[in-house]
Image (tube, rainbow, N blue to C red; front, top):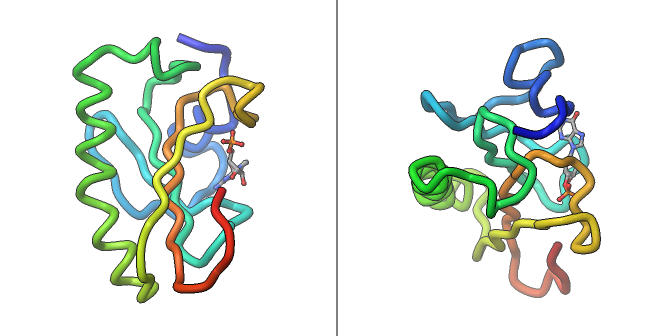
Length: 114
Ligand code: 5GP
């Protein structure tokens, strides 16, 4: 388990977020600073810092949520594709030490990813 982060506060309902999907073990909500319309973060409710720290069953739950969400998000914003990304460690750009998967809708000719 990692130190408490802003994502733990979102899970606890202590700060608001636009939730788009929830299971017993995962939560998905809109990114506060979206790279594109519909940019969503999917997190395990339990706060593990790095992907390597996740129990296998929780990794499976997290990817199952991503798998379910990507077509819904793509359709919701009429995107052409999706970039799915994890910044795993500070040198990779991870700012919040609580594993999170970025789901970023992509559009023909948008010229860049996360
Ligand atoms: P990272 O750089 O760690 O991979 O991504 C962190 C993401 O969390 C960023 O895209 C940032 O916009 C998002 N973020 C940071 N604070 C908040 C917040 O309080 N609420 C929401 N919904 N997203 C946040």
